[in-house]
Image 1 (cartoon, rainbow, N blue to C red):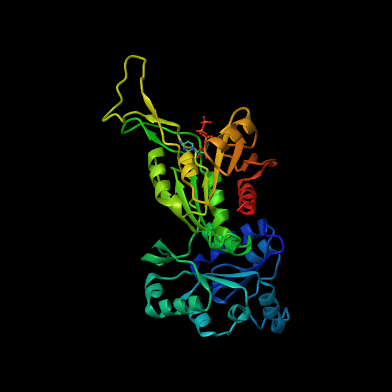
Image 2: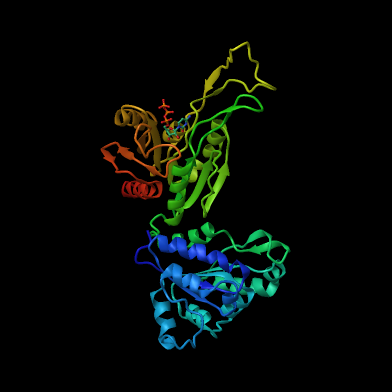
Length: 396
Ligand code: CTP
């Protein structure tokens, strides 16, 4: 995924520095060329050898290291970098960068970098909230640095508050957003539904389905990385929420319908990837559902078809894409849904294919439009998302 990308990690002296080993390792697994720079203080928390072993590149600590050409090293590194992540960034390094100070390898290189620079502050809450630090952060933003908001929680010093380095996945998502894709959805608004709906029977029990939300979340993530403003209406999912996406959590088909009704008009692209229940219990029992001996009788009513509603009411220029989960006659059934629901595209997948459907990380889909049927080979849900978005963009 990151082949030919040069990523520079700048690690400064905070206890959270150890997390950067996982970040470096994840990037190398995606075939990125990773170079780590450390301040002298950072080497008290993690050994440069860890990074050298993980990345296969020399870890750069001191400008006056005699083992390499320090005078040109920082400039060539600065020139070749596609992105620099300064994490964890201490108050001291943030202050130095805000003032343009360059007194070691790390600050010298960052000052020479023209690529995107991302800063993830990590420090004691009082230091973070100090107006001097806040002013320095504002100054960095003004100069085009992207700032990752620190998490709140119990810090290493025992204080509770803002200042924690976010989880590795969050740090990685900032890098991915920067280097993975062209920003060909910049300025576009995308509305996506994902996950299962939950239809209550009584205060304790419910009916749902096996959807995990992986396909819809992958679509949301890829759209956000490609520059879109993404609204995700999500049924109950156990997977982490994608970064850079505005998420609205819902439970039932009715909740999902209401959330979509409030949002679809503003969207340029609507993608309904949720597994919405077609039926919901007629009434939710007040207490416990009455059960005769060996017989559980429930009566059901149809849910509103959200995709049909959006299809019928779409505005000119708006692109509507639905999904279809089929067990037989995949293409014919999906074509029927395309017409019936007035969608511009249906992404059909068969529950009978190995590696496709619920809970898998891969999928096998057929993309169906009015004049085309395109079957894709098995691939990751992220790669499928890229292909679906490519197809949508080419038709808008
Ligand atoms: N869908 C919807 N609202 C519903 C049911 C489905 O918006 N009440 C959407 C799904 O999100 C999907 C598409 O319609 O994008 C097709 O869903 P699917 O369950 O495959 O088709 P159904 O119309 O429900 O028909 P069937 O279950 O009979 O195949």
